[in-house]
Image 1: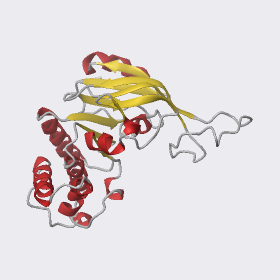
Image 2: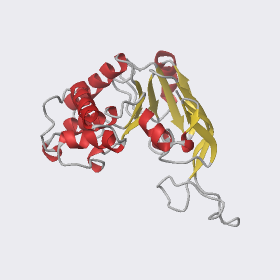
Image 3: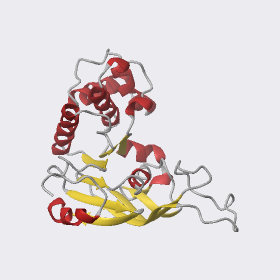
Length: 255
């Protein structure tokens, strides 16, 4: 379970990078730093498929980067399985896997299998366990037998699937994907979404961050929409979708 309690995040001196302001760097005479998140209290149960939506700048990416300690709250707290994230970052990042909007910027190896193995290797696992995890993760995203291929020769959709496999190899309880469909054509988008459905059916919790709600509400258990850094909508997709008319998100066709 992921839980945020009264989470507020103010940008620090490095504007736009999501770094929290600290007391030592704050100038009491300076204007208040921009607020990215405002008193966000949210619980994500194990096994839930949560769609987190909102316009660009609404705070979606900032919020999920708190889930495994990539960002630190200005005020409030974040817990994973009842443990404060800051108490054990390795544990938090093992339980909450993250796939970023531009996965190619996060690859650390030239070939598929070596990149997917990077996380388990850093956990200090033995070679047999690493190989087992890599094989299982690649099979889960329909990339079995392609471990020796160069990542830079894959299509955008295939690179996205390798990024998902890298997160799955850590065997997280939650998989967070930040705008995973950016730059993908309709075929690749459908392929990635189909694999997320499969992972959800197998018990992995999914947090899908998007501003484009086409096709993603059918598998979702819940829809949360952020506006100006606060929760504007939180509910079952069929009920919450009625509130979308006044919000700047790309709505599904049935709306």
